[in-house]
Picture (cartoon, rainbow, N blue to C red):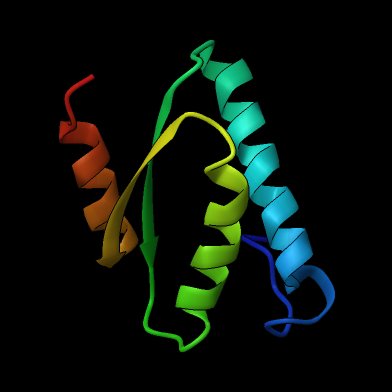
Length: 88
């Protein structure tokens, strides 16, 4: 499996669940990388639900000292190139 799949607003993809996932990602990143402040790159596709899902995730992520970079609609290989060339 390569992600979370469900209908937007239902099951796993409710506002509350995505908010909790955002918090969990922030906590995991702080522990894994032993950093208090993190930078996270967000990309998404062209589905109409993307902006809502992004907003729900951000509501949990931004409870922590995180810098979010929104690359908007971008294919995964391009995101990997951005990450690879990003300054530390």
